[in-house]
Image (cartoon, rainbow, N blue to C red; front, side, top):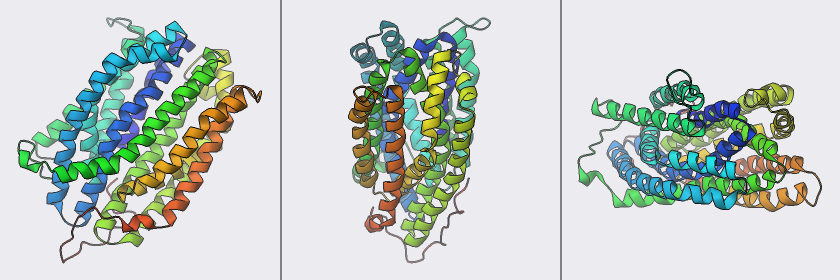
Length: 444
């Protein structure tokens, strides 16, 4: 749940920036597509730490779980500094190269360069979240990140619109609100560590806790998972360029609908991350059948939650769009998009749950292959259907929806083949095995 709540930062930013016009929405939403690369680098840590810690806990090797978490913390600092420096200097130039509209390029570059600065804090909080969840405690990180999310929602109108004594910072205000909120989240996790309320006995001051072997495993497990996010970012940037040819309202519609879809992402990711923990713990305890059952139970849960959103998107498309923008053209275009993408919501939920099940097993290549193929196809297909095919923006919307359905079919079928059971992360269990872990065993 905690990981999914991060997506609400961008949703809140988009909702309040919508008061500034379609160009501002287009800039922030396009920045979100690009900032997904920032989150994707963090996914290296989430995937690797989740798999190693959960299997260590399942095998009753808390010492190895702690070593993996400690190693993840050090990697978070290194990766965070690299991404922050690169994002700060590179974001304005990237937007200038990608977008012809000077207003969108200026606001988008400014927003993304500021967001990049939070990379070190973001990655540290991601490792903390992953460690808590992998130990079966999903409630604590959910509460911490929920506080940060609510703080972001409260700060947004004051810093964006300049309410009361606050300056009117517009798009910059949205970025600053997100930075403040994420720093608070990281400080909260640090306080839990200092008060010895962390689920594993980490000794961050002890350099011997670092393991080059576990660092290599984190990278091997996490990089395929991260590449999915990076590819998502790149593909949506190209889709934004294609959509931009039809005007700022169409580009705003792409961004707003993506934010509305994040509601499904939030819920399905929460379930998926719980599934990853249960799959990892059950594999550590040498109970692969229970791991399979956990994934299936998670898929059933998201069928209901995503099905509810499908109905909402189909029948309340216009009111949902008006929450983010009052521009009539953007509302009409976004409502059409929302109804088309509604049919893919359940499949998106299945994709996320079974992808995380692969992560818990430490086998992240199958989701990468499926996501890569369908994502790469999106760009030329959307261009042809929308342009030469004559479908206009609707062609882009249908391309996104249909490829999403394909992913939601293929990834679960691949998981059912069961080859993930053969993966070994070197977590040796003691002679006395822990009690079986079922679909309801993880906290939260």
